[in-house]
Image 1 (cartoon, rainbow, N blue to C red):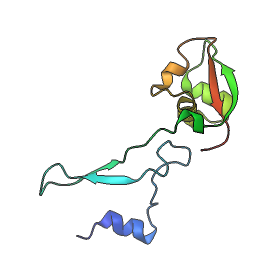
Image 2 (spheres, one colour):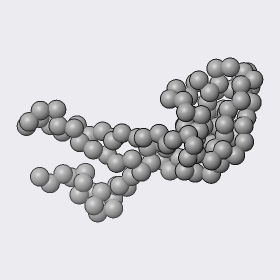
Image 3 (cartoon, one colour):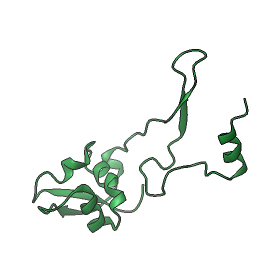
Length: 114
């Protein structure tokens, strides 16, 4: 089967990693799910495993402000609102809004990339 999208990826016309460099899915492979024999494959992002909390270096703790949302906290502490997921990973939460639910709470801010 000659997949035109794959041909474009192989030729370098389409990036092989479709995610933004700051995306939590950067480097996570794409996969195909075949729901039943002969069915059209469904592309999807493979499972992303959250790093173990002890493997993430923490630079500092930040105090949640009353006006904070996960993206605002990330912009204030990491310089990019798209990096909110790094703070969620460092605090072992799957719902980023848990980070900012309680004004005055302390949250771990990771250092560098991982």
